[in-house]
Image 1: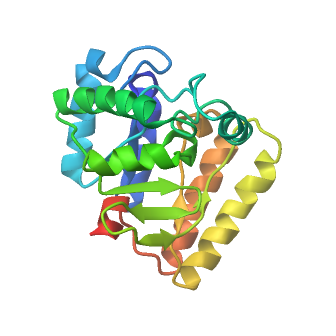
Image 2: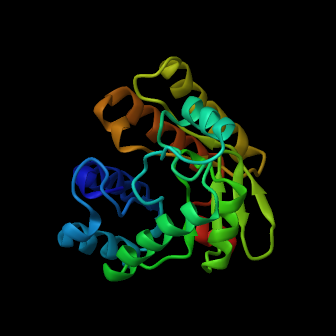
Length: 230
């Protein structure tokens, strides 16, 4: 979520409201696709209203773009997995601390302080996790689950997501619905990731909504990441 995707944010939130469910909004405070969050007061107000409505605000990196620093192997894996968006995947302590401090300053300024963090591409280096913990963050996520940074306890649950325009797009859309239903029936932790770009391809939006509907009809209880941690 960022000022550049304000229309998409509103659309997904309206879809969530139609189901009566809360969502965790992953906010990019830095210069992503244009304006920074600090330059968009109306968007900040919208996000504060969503939190008052019951949604969770999570920090989603600083600028959602992988820097040219860090361990080469980690950087290579991040490029393959996250298309250059894995900003915290290979950072050492100093780099992670610098980006996190800038992000926190903007979030605080906008009245959106949070202790939840989802790294871009769901990838964070060990050093980045240590920096998050020292900064007082309570939880973070990766591809495979939710981590309580205070206790080290992990709640396992693979993130179901789509890759607009990527290979296997149609297959991923079909799998999302089936896996959401199956996991909910087994009492599992169902995570459905919605991306602004999904809305540019109507079939992907439909697949995501059907997956949500399938999970709810199979008995899933909707909540946010913060709700699970609490």
